[in-house]
Amino acid sequence: MTMKKAIAGLLALALLLMALPFGALAEVPEDAKLLDGATLVTLGDSITAMGVWPEAVATDLNMVLVNSGIGGDTTEDARNRFDRDVRAKDPDFVTIGLGTNDFVRPSSSPQVSLARYRENLEYFVDEIRGMDAVPLFITPPYVREGAYGGNYPDGLNAALDEYVAVMRAIAEEKNVLLVDIHSACDAYAVSDFLVSDGVHLSALGKQVYAEEIEKVLTANFRTDPTAPRVEQPAAPEVEDGYWTKSFVSFDPADWLILKQGTMTITNQDGVLKIANTNGLWPEAHYSPSLSDTIAVPVEGSVLNIDFTANCGTNVFFYFNGSTPTTHYDTNFVNMVSYFKQAIPALRVNSAGDIEPGQTVKCQIKLSSILSDDMIDENGNVLISGAKFYAVGTAGATLDIRELSVTRVDPSTLPAEPTYDDVVDLLPADASQVAQVSNGYVDYEWTATGGFRMARGQSSSIAWPSVMITENKTVGLAETPYLHLKMSPSNGAANGYLYYQVNGGSEQNIQLSQLFNGSVYDATSPLDMYIDFASAIGQPTATVTITRMSLSVYGNVGDAITWKAIAFAKEHEDVPPVAGDLDGSGTVNMADAMQLFRGVSGQVTLTDAELAVSDLNGDSVVNLIDALMLYRQVA
Image 1: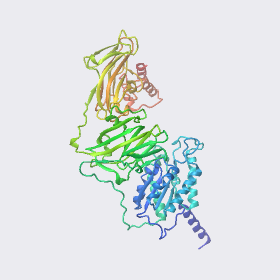
Image 2: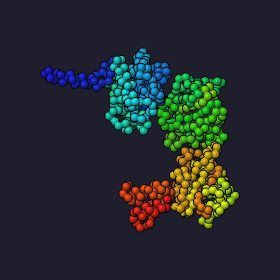
Image 3: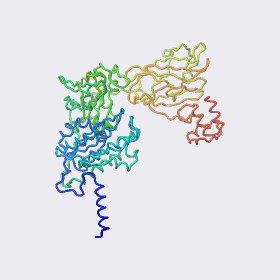
């Protein structure tokens, strides 16, 4: 062998060794640990808890998985729960994927200092090796600049890089296997590797995680293709018969307090008592193992709820293996609105929390809270977790007496309420109408069924109104659209809808909010359908329209004619309004300016815009049309 070839060979070997993770071996020795059948504990934050990659690694390498990721965790949080979530699981391998939250600076300082981060990582390594298990570091991925608020003079990733460097240094010093995700993700665009929040993994990111971890494990430890396959935990089957089962444990040890010392959970005479210790809004998690979830048929199952909120409270239930702690990005339901629907007098504050000093005792049909995609092909669902916030006064308790599900004969359940396909809000006769606002409106019903309003001679204000009594119930899940239709006239229109959601306190929405923020100039026709359910953020609620005020603006005698104000089940296709370039259903100054920019060559009008821009009907869109539209709205 020539000297030149020898040097080349040594260089190639050096490059190969440099490519291996710290502590990695060129060949797997015969006495290396066996991956098949080993217990893998994944210690981490939300990237681990929600990541899916732990399941992929365990399945591919035939390992028993314990996912010990918790969203928001730092190394300090993970150290506080290490005995429960790692040591008690008797692991063979432990991945440590932490740092994304340690470096975050909600104030001038990071949540965990670099020095403490080092101490915590070294603690994990020493304790894991003391259990005769193998630690495996996973460097955190980059984040999108701007994803976190706080003080980062050199940018988010520059601050994160300091923590990544510490993990790499400890891996080298202590010969810890390292999966350098931080380097691996450099090959991908941030928008590809992460979801829109700029922190959590996309499908690609999860795939890269699994692949990189499997590379390191299989390069250092044995696999046995003949080993029996590990049976991953299976969800329970639906139990026959009719029964009632609690879907939470009343043993405080089965509940998780995310931040140590911020809550207390006790059981007093069979009542689970949850309280905060800091006057803030910490959360308590019930996240059972998959084998402890409850499978129920959706039809014929009823949730039994009984608790007293001496503190402010918010409640989430989780389904299909999703829990408050892992896989919590889907399959959960905020229950407060459903409690409110069952108990109309329930007081809920603007933050959506149940106010203190109230008892919630009700039954809720399971079918009423689940979307179709949460129900499997057999009509079943898994109830798999619960989360409670204890908000406000320190020491004030949330007293839980029952959270259970009853399977009953569906034929014994009361029928679902039915709603009219169309709920007409225009007044039927004068008994519904009253003058308001120190003004006066002349009103009448036209021969074609319209409701005409004109500013009366004796009106002392420019916006006289009438108040119309309604008290009509609308199921927004079935009848979500508000149809507004008006004939062209010489006045301008506005008004308010007053409504109650699920029997709660009266709220209102100004019609101008539905006219894209401005009053409606009735010189142009109006015919529009508004997704009212989405407009008020209540897609499944039952609302009662208690009353409606309608106003007319203009000189004495100026009028508007309403042809329809009604809730409708279907959204009918409405012909486009001439001059309505933005598709809002109304014509305004924005439309006129867009048309002017189009005919003057500043912008290119779309086909949809051109279709409503020929105001004079000469088959040509030009400056004349722009001037006509401007005069119409000016």
